[in-house]
Length: 111
Length: 111
Image (cartoon, rainbow over all chains, first blue to last red; front, side, top):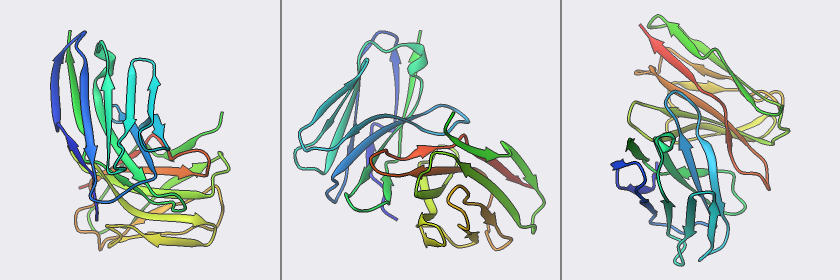
């Protein structure tokens, strides 16, 4: 089945640094989502994007819906230890109930 | 509080036994989903259901079965035909305008 490509696969950063990750698809989506998963838990929705070019923030997190509708980006500013986890992107076409998930970016923050 | 309940959190079974994982939601969502996650991997769709009494295969349906007799419930049976059933299983639900919401997951270990 299709999976979206996320990069980087993993990141080790120092506390206070900014983080950038992205997600690309071979097909167009009308909705892009970003989730965070902590060990042993289900993913939690961070940001949802519905319009090409849209830039949306949630606290220190900012995500963008790429203008080609085939990619999305997530930035985390001033990282803190509790940002540790796996970040997944997901795409969905309007009118469908099926989500396609990315392969995940594993983030570790060193205090 | 509205949410998704998956029980139990940890499940152990002997090889060759069928096992059913429970998923209940009180969010009044129409659609429900089952995903499988292997260590260090992303989410792979097993089955999803858009309405009661209807469901569709995902990317890795072989060796699994589901039912959707009630809107609130979407149990997943891992059959003995599933060759490598040890994994983390996530249930999710969705109804527009809300996006997909995940349960806490069940970790299945087959001995």
